[in-house]
Length: 206
Image (cartoon, rainbow, N blue to C red; front, side, top):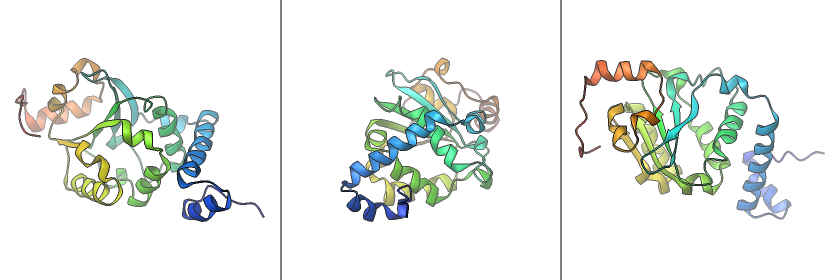
């Protein structure tokens, strides 16, 4: 009978069976996923435009942009979504990097489940967590605050101090140049309609 080494619920037993430590087993699974990501057609996900690199911040660190409104969680092939995330981020996370998540005008259909986020977090190796230097949430809501609290309390306490909720796009300009940040027009239009022009005060608490 074939052994399915892809099932996360059976990591413990399989790692013992294969004579691997948990870290080695996780890395082995990640390497298999990375090979799949390089081999498979992921245009279904890449074409959505919800995840991409956009320049660097003022310290020269790559900026990864995630557009929440363009992430159709309930309709997307989640296996391919994970593969695309790995394909995009693997070369970036070898050094320091930051993530900017735009929660602007998202709806329930865009919200990933706790179980899927947990699985993704468990699949990604240590370099993803270690080299992530900041995670910015733009236009946060009650949902993002609850999700952040849950995730950083029960899943990833090590990144708790790296998460920053910012009420507007201009707050990002303190850490990255506007020329380096490529985002959909609807985000800046919403930002201006909500916050007005030149609302950012340098040195303000965020």
